[in-house]
Image (cartoon, rainbow, N blue to C red; front, top):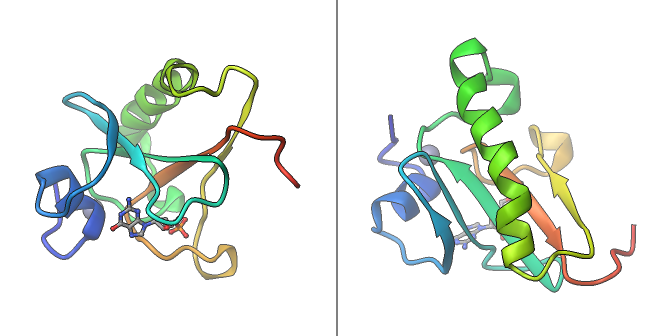
Length: 112
Ligand code: 5GP
Ligand code: ZN
């Protein structure tokens, strides 16, 4: 289920443009609009939920699907030398978009 007020759901629906690098019926990967590394992609599921803490058995299937797809998508986007995956959870992590997403960061030696 998608949410009408969520920017990532709007990206899924094509109501907000994005630079897509991978899409299928379950997930979408697109370039972060404010990249924090030379390559900065965001992987999202086509189901709206806010936080990793809201994941349950029903959502585990989608999370597993996304995580297993990421290595191939990363390699296809110039990250064969390595990358970092980040999921921000809530305020202290600085989460700003409340549609679960995995950051894929790389394309350079990461500074931390
Ligand atoms: P968070 O801080 O919630 O983990 O990450 C949200 C990310 O989404 C940020 O890195 C931010 O730059 C990115 N972002 C926010 N709005 C948009 C948008 O409209 N388009 C794209 N491509 N990225 C966005
Ligand atoms: Zn959403």
